[in-house]
Image 1 (cartoon, rainbow, N blue to C red):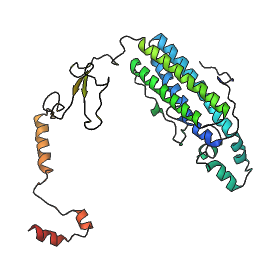
Image 2: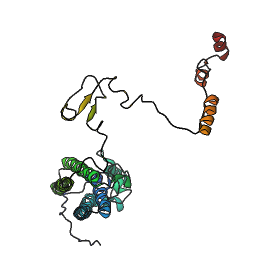
Image 3: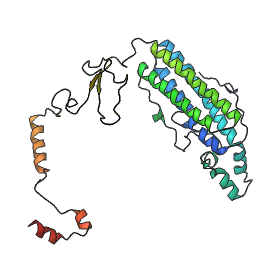
Image 4: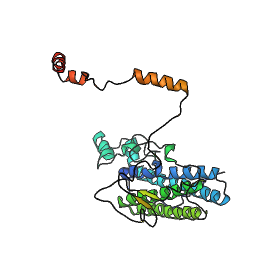
Length: 299
């Protein structure tokens, strides 16, 4: 059961209208790293979670993300207030209104013309929000790692939004939202490392022949060594001969019934290519090649 408190989690004080900035803010409203995606991700994880501690944490954070959606949506609406009135009431000439929503390199028509100044469930480029942003897999260690990365990406987007505005009130609210991403990262990390073991994700162990092998598949100038491929951690395999098939000849094989094998052989015969042929192609005809001359040269 949800109940809405009409007070925002963090006060929004916008200094002046700025429809272009409002459009950029949509990235955290309806974008892949935005608050709605985060709320849906953690809410659905919480519903399926069997550990009572993680379930409670996920539900708490999912609900907080909805409050963040309200904050960022309110910022969008406040930044659009002035332009919304001018556009709705045709308070300026057509040319001036057009310049106000398309000038300065912004595309604020996304919120102005299409949505009347309200926050839209799109990213800043107008791409509609979709459930494909939710990447939960149903394994707690995998999902917690994904959640940590999602919070990190959201923090980076908030940093970039902070860097493109000089409005003190907007910066202040965005700074709060950015900071909460840090808090959530810490909670998810604590939850992850409270599970032991937590790696590798899932139940099945890896094949010990390959678990700690590093294949140097991109060779040449720029080869580098570090803890990600150090010999104390990995068997370092390099060179074309060493990297051939690790478990045999590398050929593909399938067992067929006698009937399947017979039909397949018929197909192979029927669709066989003649390696000795040199057919005249439509491309050659399109280039003006004389069909008779080609035939004479072949003879």
